[in-house]
Length: 465
Image 1 (cartoon, rainbow, N blue to C red):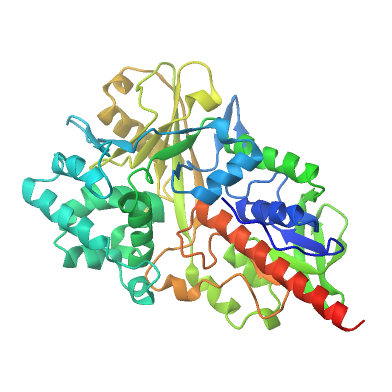
Image 2 (cartoon, rainbow, N blue to C red; image 1 turned 180 degrees about the vertical axis):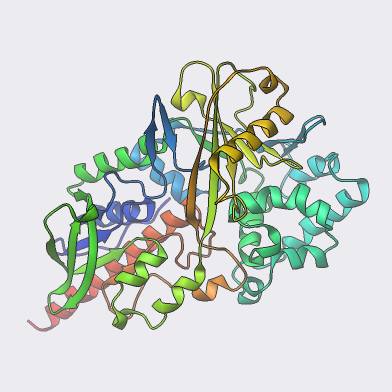
């Protein structure tokens, strides 16, 4: 349960810049505390990185976003938005792992067993590893429970190096560890922070038996997040201004002046004054907007970099699989999702999600589509005879920051050196990877920092009377 926000005087105005999950969360929490809030978003809809667009008769998501049962703050936000019923959460963790020409493996937790024993039977039966590799994998799972995700030393190490030190060969990494690492961190174990990998595996799979149960949206992301958020914020009295690009944030005696223009420069430029500002935008945009006095480190934020994700969309005339999602190894396919229920009533619409897509982000769409249509036919025999009606590609070049060793030292906290100017976003120092849960947590933290600042302001004003 989310704790109640601290009380603050309702006479304050706060500007939230950015309408993604972090900005939405911060705006809701501030409005709940009685603050007058204006939320500015440069796109035409809220949702940030989790939005949808029309492609002919399809509604297409920018990425394939799933969540885990342990995403407690994110799931609480869904409850608040009234969107929980638009998702489906597994009764228990279960992932089909497909390989061309082989029977499927299933990684699933065993009901009734406590963590981490709940995964041991699945690992013991995992035929994509030999007996020796499975024994060593179980040993590494046990050792990973002792890695502290909040230890700076863990963040400076690579997960791949740690796995090698714990007896994991390249095949075990490719066929087991990277199934989760690449999807969760958008980078392979070789290039991932040990601390962030430990957060994923410990929190999601090893500390609580049901924590890793997978949830997925049953509707397009804009219907799950952006539109319900707009309705809720309006109901709470928040002024929501979409199509508003923030160009400058300037501190002054009244608080902060936020200069805006329409997206693409189409609208008349405007300026609003706020007692505090929550800047909930990606790190590259934050580095441009944060005044120099607010952070000594803003010029270093670009070192977080970015990592791409590519999605290959395949629409078939008939159904080729009954699986709602699956992972694949020894195949160009990494993860594949059935998006038919959210987008169409007949045939089948599958999306292949390619994380850590540095090698494919610039590959021509036609070649990507052909390669992955053939790969899908390699793991789903029915796809060999099904008519492929359409294939297209979407790309997110900056899907996440690059979650490499040493990144935590580059991730700023919520507070800046200018009281009242606060940062939010999954890229800030949440202790979590760049996920929807991290974004929501950052929004809560940012709102609490703002509220504490406003309470302090009230006390200072009362002391001068």
